[in-house]
Length: 392
Image 1 (cartoon, one colour):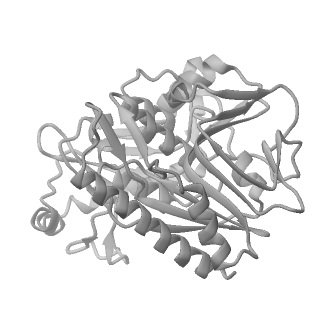
Image 2 (cartoon, helix red, strand yellow):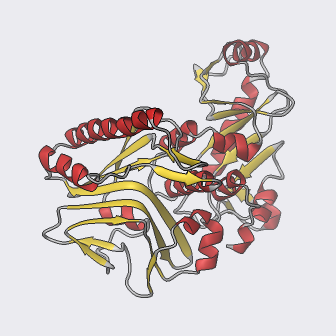
Image 3 (cartoon, rainbow, N blue to C red):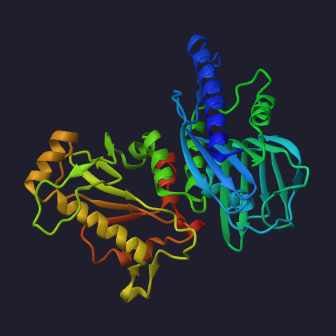
């Protein structure tokens, strides 16, 4: 099967299936008081050598058509393991299997994992192994399909930990036919339960959204735009983490005035976030830099950010300069209602594994009103847990 046909088939089937659940819910609300159905908003379609994989992402109270994001991955095992592409020593050899409601992991510090990934509390059924390496799954010669629903996979290597939270996902051979793919979807959803959605109560909604965001930024090689799309479709992350009444996602702001040296047509910041005084701060979203041990370098007296982060701060400074020109400021006000006064510049980058608060503070000394926040801290702020990277 061509990858484009795989995507088209999955889009049509899942959009139809999820829309039917949403339509039914609109007519017959969920009976249990305080219970909420949450729907995916993104379909991530991944092409690996010999395999196709789709994963449903998001947790929204209303269903709109899935936005498809494409991804290329050299190995299905790196996708599942988040570290290694090598042939694994697995828990399970898969032929045609469906897993639901499980937390799968190698041996790890369980308490530390629960602090960093609080959504793991939602998965009490655990299968753990103290041996083996790499992906918990491998695919034999007779492999046909694997589907995963409401599962987490906790992967560890050396002192590093990754957690993949899966709402619904499937792996098939790239030679699968359209008929076989549809038959697999139908087989996995043929009972009377609603599949591909979350059923939540109380604070569980935040835990699911935060868990999925963590899965995305700990996904090796995933594009910034896909992470940005997830945040765009879950505005509550920004509003609750930063106490924002309003924010504008990726405003397109033309250069109206400048000093003659500007060659760009416009600026396009990731986020303009409104403060309590009505003015806006400027945010930019990078990646978790999974291949970096630290986002800073050098000793205390000369502490500075690595080039990737330094470039992000410089980009934010360019955005700030844009608003110093009256014509630009007026354009932003008229088009988006954005007004800026001494804006804070915020870069979201890195994770607990490579971001250390004391080192970040030292590296920020040379800047004016610049803040650097890692993604794990962002998640903890959204969920409402006091962040503490020193515990992990």
